[in-house]
Amino acid sequence: MDKLIQKYFFFFTLFVLASTYSLDNSTAPYIFNDLYSLLVQWPNTFHPNGHTIIPGILEPYTLLYHARKDTEIPPPSPEWLAFDPEMSYAVMATKLPGPTYMYTYRTTKSAKVLYFNGMSAAWGEGWLDTQYTVLTGQGKTNGSRNNEVSLWDDYGRAKGLCQWSEQRGFDGIVRMNAGFEIIWCNFNSPSLRLVSSLNITPPGTPEARRSFPFPLDADFGQSSSDELPLHSFRPPGRGPGRGRRPGDGGRGPWGYNTAPLARTGFLEWMRAATRYHSTIQPHLSLSYHQMVSFYYPRYQSLYSSRSGKLMQEHLLWEHITDEDVRTFLDELDSVVSTDLPGTEFDWQAAAMDVVAFWADRIGQTQHLLDGVNSTLNLTDVVRTVQQLSYSSLNPFIAYGDALNASGHDIVFNFRSSPSLSPGTIAPETTALERCTYSATEFLAEPELQILMTSQEYILKMSIETILERLCTDFGTLFAESTDLTDSDSYPTFISSWNSRIDTLVRWLEWPAWLRCEEICDLDSICTMPAWPITWGGGPFGGRPGPGRSNVDFLKPTCRRLTM
Ligand SMILES: *[C@@H]1O[C@H](CO)[C@@H](O)[C@H](O)[C@H]1NC(C)=O
Ligand SMILES: *[C@@H]1O[C@H](CO)[C@@H](O)[C@H](O)[C@H]1NC(C)=O
Ligand SMILES: *[C@@H]1O[C@H](CO)[C@@H](O)[C@H](O)[C@H]1NC(C)=O
Ligand SMILES: *[C@@H]1O[C@H](CO)[C@@H](O)[C@H](O)[C@H]1NC(C)=O
Ligand SMILES: *[C@@H]1O[C@H](CO)[C@@H](O)[C@H](O)[C@H]1NC(C)=O
Image (tube, rainbow, N blue to C red; front, side):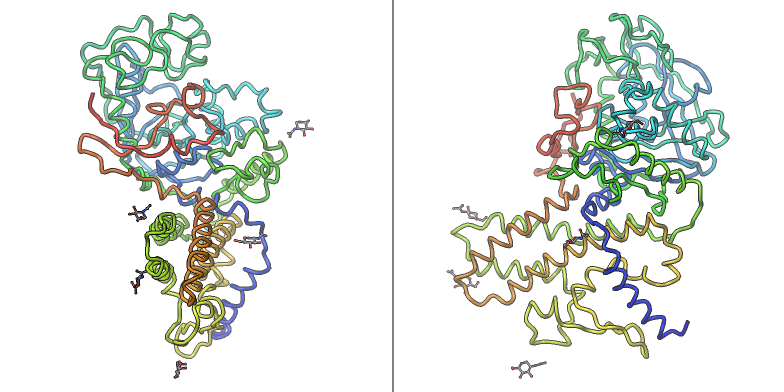
């Protein structure tokens, strides 16, 4: 194609696309949040009811840890591998009496994994919902009759997920609770090499009154005198020590004395879980063009379960119809069984760029407007609002072509032609349009249109919807604060900006605003509650659980790591 026509076509497609595909965008903020949060600890704790599944690759030569109570090598499959040795140690050496053996592994080549987002390795309804749909192929109404859905049956769940995934060429399933872990489907696989197997039992560990067969036999836990391990078929009884948490003294969670050296195991696990609280878990890379989500607009049966609710209150499995589950699984199946390359665009980085660019300014603007009172000089407030909104938009504002334009015109009406390269003619666009399509405009290129998968198309719509809203809201703040001449109307405008930004923040629900209000001492970490260490929730009760609002409970705080 001739270069000139190509450029015309490029911009033409851009705006035709934007106007003709009037996809219902009401789930755009949820899809956007799931996208930018993939494999990051805090966002998946704040929005724990994951709706998204995405294939990925585990790097060769990645260290992984598996602790257990017996010496079986290789362990029966499937079993768990942790990225953080602290997780393996705490689960076995701190939590359970009897000897602990640590098996350290390293991958020998790339392994294919399937990642379930949210707090998907924790036991609670909401948290496990996406897995239930894969395991049963149905919604809760019909699917809960299936044996594979017992909250306590983590091995049953692992087997079911592995059965589904191995048939499709996956080596394991990545999930998160306090840190990330892998359900590894086959320990005889050549992709995994044993580095060492050690008896790491700390001195003073009490003897187990019986052995812990892993996986547990079916009648384990029947007797109330059995020590209850983490992977139990049954809810823990009301035995001594039930519900104990690290920091409660020397006694383990199930009521026996933990070895002195093992006592801080849970705190160290928490340290590990906080290590990557806002950055992506290393050693994994995701295939964004294959991301499938129950937040895609086509799942009509979920609409009512979401309306007026926070993301952390969205319950999926109890609302979805069997038909929508089938549609979802068909899409997942077709995505993992075809190997379309996609555009190779790093969608998560694009979403993270948007958040990085906007989150602080939104936070500062909201803080300013929330704090307005009669003692403040409103002229200063208006000027600060103008400055903050301008700083978000100035890469797109062509003031040089219209020095005298009003604030409103320069953002919403004045058209400039972005000069692409000498000799080409680009259509004229407004600052609002340039801002809205700033992350995705290149995808209008015909070559990329051909490569883009339908999953990427939804990611594109979601990023554009978020940007359109951000650019419109901050464009309005800039236009009004710039064009305002009558100081008598300051209070009216300030109050309307305040509610506009509050509404925006509620709509976005960005975990990017999570932070400790204080600076933590060196013997402390800034951490969110983490299941099962400091967040009982779900089946353990005593704390807010899935489907209820946890906003205050989930605020990060400084926690001491010594006891
Ligand atoms: C998409 O969202 C915008 C606001 O961001 C709204 O004006 C528009 O009506 C929405 N479109 C649909 C189809 O819901
Ligand atoms: C449950 O299964 C029945 C029979 O197949 C079906 O008619 C019904 O719609 C299903 N319920 C849901 C919520 O999908
Ligand atoms: C007004 O706001 C300023 C700045 O946020 C604060 O320092 C001051 O204490 C507030 N005054 C009143 C009366 O609330
Ligand atoms: C508010 O601040 C502006 C400039 O910063 C100043 O000109 C004006 O006199 C101040 N108004 C009041 C009421 O102090
Ligand atoms: C801006 O307005 C002033 C006064 O109306 C005029 O002299 C000047 O030429 C205008 N500049 C531009 C770039 O339009």
